[in-house]
Length: 405
Image (cartoon, rainbow, N blue to C red; front, side):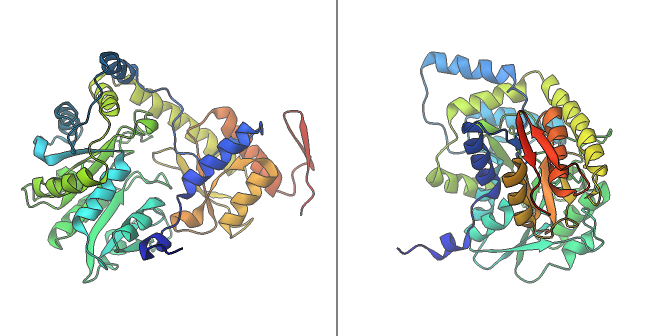
């Protein structure tokens, strides 16, 4: 069977694969603890549910414009003005089937084959594959100082004649690192000077800890004209715990949005009207749920970091935001894929291998579940890896005996 060169170059989403594996094990009745997921457990906002129910009750569920309904665009404009102090017009906005689609359509709108897109490493697993889907080249920039916090020179030294765009995700998936105000200012200025597109993936921008405030990229943009190459990405999945609703958006110049809309119109048409209605309800509704989620995540982070710090040999950088902790487990196994598979097989704890994010020897652990899952999950991992632990472990009524060294 013949498949395309692009298809052969793309790997499956490891995070979605792990979600599927965890679901299969749970369906069998296995006591799986999923520390690999990127899905808050909070319920969707009541305003989102009521808005959806109101539309469903009319039974008028129809097509929508390719770039989103007028009501959806108004909600995004309001959000952008409130959180970014930037008043844009409807032609500057596109609503998509999740922030992932917004990024994908943006890349399709700006990239030619063999052009390059730079992003800091560790990076979200989809960035390289999305770039390759455009027949372009992903370029990871690992901070030279060994931290999770890039400097401008880390990006700058990767820029060449084929560089077209830079993607910045802060706070970052998988590390939870929130980049400094100085770095954001520098990268905005640098991209303007070098005439590069800058895609700001702000999907976690309100889920930050320790009194930090969101950093607004527009504060440092000198070019606010329709020639600007700044593309802002956001959505409802993370901050409103609405992952299954799949509504995200992009804010950019009118020409970029026009091209993105043309692509999306042939790709998926407009986002589902029911899901847009839910997103509108969340954005325009009571916002206390966002802060409640943020506080819960900060507490969960503290518990996970404390648990990991008591784990001999593990190196942990305390996350500034998101709901991920990217921990160095190389003292136990430098092959993170083998380590993740070992933990699933031996103690049924799901983690994500660091190699998928561009850094071997690490595991991404999610703390968006329950405190009980965090504590028991790390306890199981420690039992499986630390040979100084007792030889036996009970998971419910099941007794495990370590038969490996």
